[in-house]
Image (cartoon, rainbow, N blue to C red; front, side):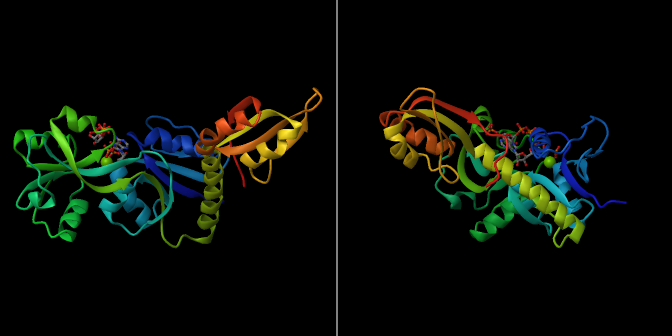
Length: 286
Ligand SMILES: Nc1ncnc2c1ncn2[C@@H]1O[C@H](COP(=O)(O)OP(=O)(O)OP(=O)(O)O)[C@@H](O)[C@H]1O
Ligand SMILES: O=P(O)(O)OC[C@H]1O[C@H](OP(=O)(O)OP(=O)(O)O)[C@H](O)[C@@H]1O
Ligand SMILES: [Mg+2]
């Protein structure tokens, strides 16, 4: 039997679609049926386990799954022995303390003697212990923002992204406890076969992430400006320069980070670049 690597992803929730999309972007083909809780990839020795995100750290720590994709917040909360091997750049959010909006909040000491409702009691208790604050936690599974309004607690600690859920529930954010994003975790000390497969997946993820950060740029330039424009577009080595059918003009091709592109666009135009075309890259191997 060929060795396979097992990866746990969230069955249904905020992370599900992007986790599966990432595997697909890595060229891994599989069917994701709605009821079946495992799926074998068709073209890579990988099996996907669809689980509640809360259970993923334990599965990965025990080696039942070798890898997992979940929020760093959940990894910290469960505090299992797992290695965080890669930040995945999606599901960016923060875990924050919030209080009712009309509260005269004076600083962290305000929480002394207060109750904080949260789905992340371990993180919150550790945070308060580190800061010598004597607050207690009320663990609830969801709809945490309701707690102060119904008298369950004076404050909450929950996930914040845009902040609109807090506002809708008459709360204000007062402290950030941690920043989070989706991460890839692995069982520590994987067997050689799984370790090799993890390296293959990491290599592909790197190519996908590089591509997402970069753009392919094509432009036309008068030949006497090639040097000046090339200096603005270092590319992976240097731009490719091809002659145009029109005498005295060339086409320059390069790779540029999206951020850099917006920074140099005016300089490119000033230097005489025309017909600037920017497109997405699917994979980029440096
Ligand atoms: N509003 C948000 N913006 C960005 N990321 C978020 C947001 N809400 C949650 N997340 C991230 O997505 C993860 C999963 O969120 P979700 O609400 O699907 O979890 P859940 O309800 O615990 O799911 P499960 O049923 O699997 O236990 C969170 O742990 C967090 O890392
Ligand atoms: O700052 P915002 O952009 O408003 O996002 C924050 C909200 O998003 C999450 O809930 P989600 O929408 O996933 O629903 P859930 O409570 O069912 O998990 C989280 O629990 C917050 O309630
Ligand atoms: Mg959960």
